Image 1: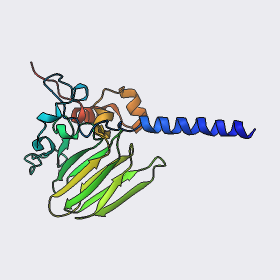
Image 2: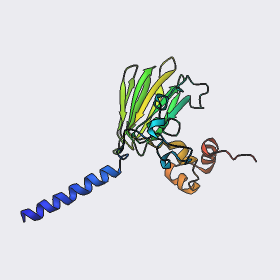
Image 3: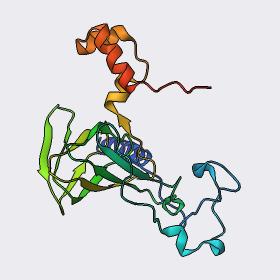
Image 4: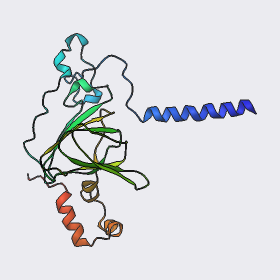
Length: 220
């Protein structure tokens, strides 16, 4: 009986750690892997560049500059992953530089493959996330403050100060993904009747929302 219990526990722990491993970026098998994009257009499928040809410049990113244009919501963001910063490849991390104009927002969204840590460089930001029990964890934070957004949970930010705000976010995945709630709901082509029933909106209101979030057709 005791042996059966041990076997049962071993199997359950094996599956737990197995699926936990699958849920994260794989561990690197070398010090670094700068993609050789000449042999493949895909960063994730590219072989590593010969280490003798790697230079310090491969590990430096110098394009985090002040924003030139803000979106309609007052957001300007530079997402940095291996596709634009090859030095991150296989290291299981990426980052984002976010600027929020006065009263600007980073709309509700989530990252399906990563937890995010957000560090406030300047400004006053109302920031938070919603857990699976629909509980909101939010607070106004400022320069030097850090907030964490657990993987897969919807989170948001709003500049509540009198000057622009700047945030630096870091992810524990080189490809965290970004699912934006408004554009996902109204810009993906979900059936109108379903949206009417889900949100209590009439068709005219849905059309207005679709015009705002649905990708514009490219003129040929």
